[in-house]
Amino acid sequence: MDRINAYGAPRGDVAQQPYAGAIDQTSPFSPAGRFGRLSYIAWGLLVSVLAQIVEFAAGGTALLHPKLDAAGDLLPPDLSPMALGVIAAVALVALMIGILFMIRRLHDLDGSGWWALLALIPLVNVFFFLFLLLKAGTPGPNRYGPQRETPGWEKVVGGIGVALLVIALIGILAAVLMPTLIGHPPVAS
Image (cartoon, rainbow, N blue to C red; front, side, top):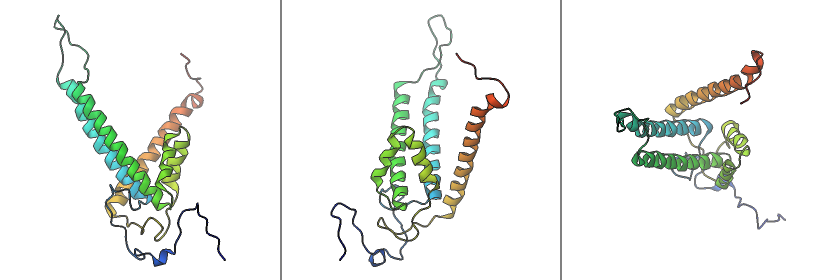
């Protein structure tokens, strides 16, 4: 006789689910459904690039409207409250979309979206993001739905995202190791 854990997550025979053999066609901006590794990277890169473009455009307005003091000298540019509001709103929307993508990625790993709270813990979040980027998803359907097909454009953009991540990691390692490689200790202030 099988014992049922009243506190465990519900389990069922996936083959009997109505989505057995189906393909996930939910919206990428829905917390329901799954994201493979390349889809997660591609959509994250797309949203962050679009957010940066809007934020730079809002911040660039300060450079387009120079201010002069009483003597006619140019004052340093400052951001208007409107530009700061746009930047904050875009950053908040990008953060919420990033959380949705993280939940979908966790669903692909057959994990609860609540695990996304690990992203709030310093140092743990670094290993958590590496886990999300490197761990392969559950093949076939799982308790969060059928496997999502990765379109060709997501594979291309995801590959670009992977290349950018590798370049960034090499840059960070070079910046950290450079003082020891050239024989000069870091300058203390």
